[in-house]
Image (cartoon, rainbow, N blue to C red; front, side):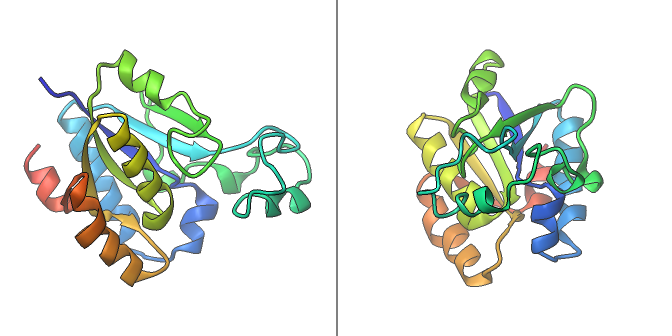
Length: 184
């Protein structure tokens, strides 16, 4: 029997604020509600670092710029918290990652295997970031995958379309939040 979990990835206030789409969080709430109603675990994945960012190399093009801006306790301010519109509930798991993929520098694989979870339903920001990286790594780890196309968001709509229409279907089932929720 396949055991599914919903991953809500990088839906932190600072990230959400960079991708203005007023319909996104309400859609995501539908997916989260359907998962909970169906008894599926909801796992939140956030990016975070220790004070002083010891995990970040200046050679890392994506995260290296944070070193220059670092001023104190990493991840302690309001901007790095999960957006309150989709906040975790008691019993939800929160996993902290150190790079783009939900698996990179986190204990996600351990949490999934301990819960006998073998199928991931992916949502998150950005499609070309955490979702793409997680699809690739999860497929290599032999997880079954579903991507909720409208549960993902990207700054470039064409990149989002190419990934969800042409790239992800090679490793994942791709559907919408409404269709997935109706099947729960």
